[in-house]
Image 1 (cartoon, rainbow, N blue to C red):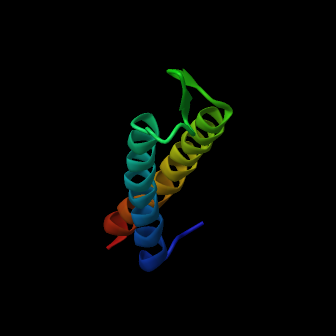
Image 2 (image 1 turned 45 degrees about the vertical axis):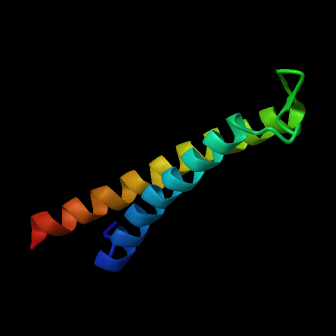
Image 3 (image 1 turned 120 degrees about the vertical axis):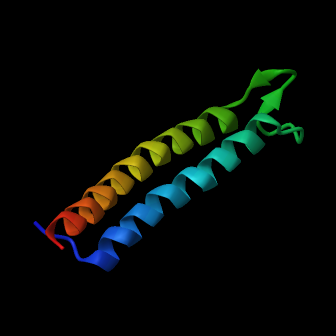
Length: 79
């Protein structure tokens, strides 16, 4: 299967964007002082649910980004 140049770049950009967004989110989650993520220094269910969400998003963003990167590399080899 061949990906077009715009699709390859979009997938690569989406993978990078996913990492930027979710790394920022996890940093903010760890620094949370509102009481949602930590209760007396112990992680809450809110923390664990959002951490799992972030990890899944890291994995999916990485997979999508790698597909985009492979598409960009394949297009450069054929041109």
